[in-house]
Length: 354
Image 1 (tube, rainbow, N blue to C red):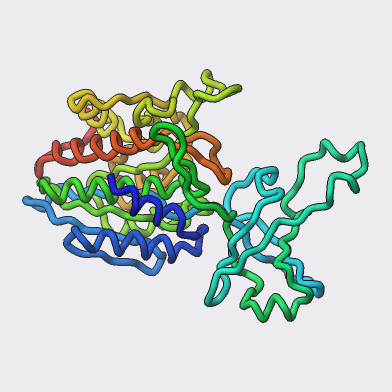
Image 2: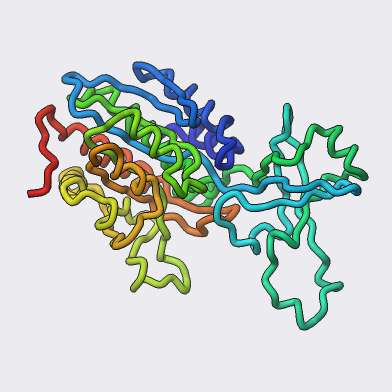
C-alpha cells in the first residue's frame, strides 16, 4: 500500500468547492500508471484505464473534498467570522488551530471563544455554535488581515497532519472521504497491472459534502455514461461506546468493508460484490440503506437512463472530527474487492434484475 501517497492526499487542505490542492496530488499520482488523466469544469479528476475489450464502462467514485469553514466577515479589529462548509459538530471546532487557504499562501489562525471563566454559570452547559466563534490570526486590524492575503470567502480547515496509531490505525481530519478517493485510484493501479475487459474510470469527485443536488458525482456520471458504478465512502464504525447497533448495524475497524443494500444500491451489483468478497476471502458486513445513502451513489444511480451502482464503505470512527480513524487493513481489503469485482465483469455482462 502506498502510504506516502495516502498521507500527502489526507494532509492536503481542500474543503468542498476548494479541492484543487488534493486533486493535484491525486492526478499527479494517477499520471504514473493510467492511460490518461483529465479534469472537468466541476473540479472532478478522472483517471482512465482502457480495458482489453472496452466493455463494460465502469466508474469508480470517491469524493476528494472535506468539511471546512469559510470566512463571512472580517471586522475592524482583524477578527474573522465564519460559516460551515458541510456538516459540523461545532464542539469539535472550539480551541482548534486552522489553516486558511488565502490567495497565494496558507495562513495559520486559532479559533477564539469567550473563556469559561467569563461565561455565566447557567450558560456553561450550552453547546457552542459556529456563529459564536471567531478566528484570530494575531492581526490587529482589518488592514493587517488583508496584508496577509486573506479575503471574505476564503476557506479553511482544522490544522493537523495524519497520525499513525496503534496497530494498523490512522487518524486524519480528511478520512471522509479522501480515503475513498485513495481507494478508487489504488484499485485502478492494481487493475493496471492485470488489465480487465472493462474500460475503467476512477473519479475523485468534488463537492460531495455540500452536493445536495448531486455535486461532482452527478456531472461526472453524466459525462462518463457508465454501465456500472462503484462508490467508495465511509460509514460509522459501531465498535465504540454508545453506538446504536440496532440502527446502524455492527461494523468495526478491521472487520472489512461494509456493503450497502437498498435505496441507491443496485441488487445485482450488491450480490456480485458479496460473491467477489467471499471468493477472495475478504471479510465484510452489510448495512441497510432504506432511504438515501447520503453518498455519491444517490446522484450516480439516477444518471441518464440509470446506472447499476454499488456502495462500499470503510468503517470510520469519529466522523466529521479532526481525528477520524480507520484501519489500513480495511482499506487494503476494499482495494482487493474492487479489483476482483471489475475483473469479473465480461463485455456481455447483464446487470438487469430478473
